[in-house]
Image: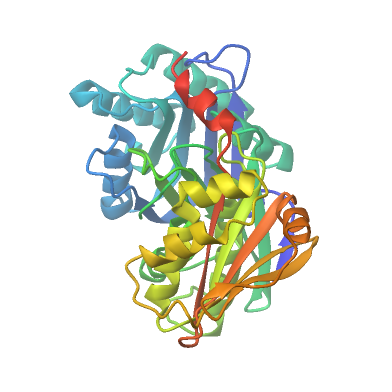
Length: 407
């Protein structure tokens, strides 16, 4: 696998655009388009929240029932969630307008929204924005970046990733973009992620790859424990790379999965590190667990602990908070057996072993925890399974951002 530059336009046949439509924000891009020159096989995962936004309902129907997909229209600023019948009708009007200007079936258009819950979309501005996007779409890296910037809300930077693999002697590319900074605790943040690939792959195998990989990537991220009404991951495969269709598990499928995993994991980590008000990306790596499910639960429990997140913000090696989070994870284990380490570019330090705190330097631990990326390594000494979860520290700015989010 080769890591490459770009995002949703990295794969062959995909175009994108970002434009200013005045949905909620002023003087900034707030609408994006992803368009494929050829029809795409679709796969997707969506929020487990019982309260689902209108775009989630629309997209789930397209992914499950439409013969193909070809375009995605995204707006930032208004979530189109809890908007009733009118909100769903606006999804249909958005798709109809995009279909008309792009010359594709309405049923092949997916829609996504992110922002404030409960507000109705200004559909006239949405429709005007679609015309602008259609006229500006390109297959360049710059166009992909403009689209990635347009879907941001409280994000501090755009998020893109891409990778290449060789299948059947031809280059296959997977690229993606996402947004998410707060209300991130996916269970499939507002999390929106869009992945494009020129691989030829069956819908069955694409769906299998996406659903399996989400378990160890997007679903291992938490910023604040809030599962959004809008969480969506859409994957589009247009087959334009020219490889033989991947329709069975084997070397070609595994090569594709490797590239997909890199893109998904990279985007997930970018979201965690860009959590609202965050100063550090926290990685909780659990090894030596009895089962894979145990490892996932333990890692996610540490990442979700507000006390642990606050301790990392204060560069405080308060390992008791981590032990506490492990203890209420729902996993049974022997605390006297596990080992706990802090690790970063500044070094690695053992802080807990044999049921008690290790003889470590608080000053050295503080230096390790002062880096922008910190790993909490937990060795359960109970088996061979491992998992990694990602989150961020909890700062004063998180409260400030969310206290006046609507204004």
